[in-house]
Length: 274
Image (tube, rainbow, N blue to C red; front, side, top):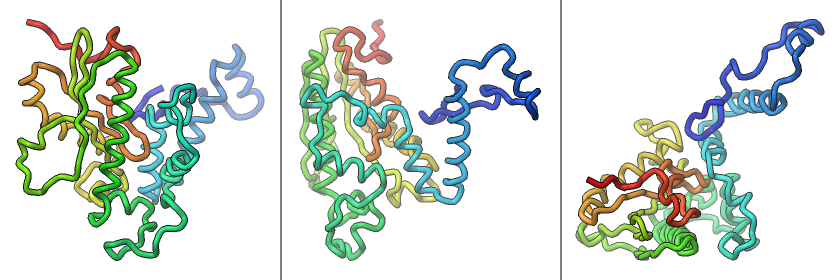
């Protein structure tokens, strides 16, 4: 089964083609049905339906690509045995509303500070220049806190930089501070969190990639370029944690596997000596 941008795709050769009629059916399956036959046919059908629905609806396609990408649904399947794996009813409701591209609440004011509707489109609060700074910083810090909690539970030492509203006149050198430094017994890593919205006007411009995962990877590359010199000066690796509001993760964010502690962490970024 091939994968493109984290979304499963079936090649035509992966599911059997039956000849017409009863004889064709028995001829195709005379040696028995292959494994996962129902899953294979269902996936092919769902892909066909998805293509038809998204043919003229770019926003639907973008949202489905994000929500169906690898790791985007982990918060729905995580067993809530630990407080860090639990969501209150209010937060869970907000997360589901975001996933369905609904406004964050039903009782929003009729107009935003910018004069536009805060609920049409539903993600307006994520990119409105008048109101976005405080909620997006809060969103950013929540993810940093979650990464920090998981890293400490895995036995790593962490140093966290809490993001504050920035001064437009601040020097770039003063703002060049990654969000978290993670130190293990064998290696250390710098990581910086970046969160995008694939339906923001800037992401839907004609000159940008027509793919939510590609936009995430572009954000990760920007972070890598920004902190590359700093990471080299410390002699440690840099792994940007790039994600979007629907839960899609960049490749390097997926590689930041904190669950294994020092045993295999990070799996694909062991610094070579000599």
